[in-house]
Length: 239
Image (cartoon, rainbow, N blue to C red):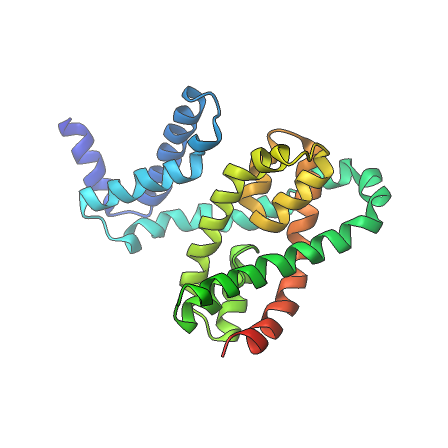
């Protein structure tokens, strides 16, 4: 135990802290998920976040010290998202065959995601800044933060909403779609990618490469549509 304490003290003074803590906690979260049989409620992302928050709080470690090392993993989010092009290429023939339905489906999903977020937040009496930060919740974090900043929201708050949206979508997307009779992995992928961006897509990619391919496509197209749509909706619906 003493050796572990000395190791933590050493790591706390170096950028290795965030990197080592993130990798170790992620492996632990994956082990918990495996122990739970891969159940949707045992998603490794919220488990890892919870463990890290408790660990940093218990040790009194500032987030800034943690992020000095975690930024290296944060940087890899970009290449990881681009890597979704691999299953897209493998399913290129199916994507081309479904091209006529893809754009209307994603457009409908983008409009629904943004409008529902704005209207529900307004009906619940949320402050204007929160409403504007919530509007781009269904796109990837960099795009959502940029949109939120442009329309007067809080970029940091938008990032939190994006994370929560992705986690929830990853948990319920497949069960809900199957409950209403949707069995086509192409439709499931489009829905997950449009509603829950990379987190939901990563989840369904473990179930079907086809779903992951269509989810990756939805992430990109939804990002473009939302970047154009949300500023217009903010002007019309948020006073």
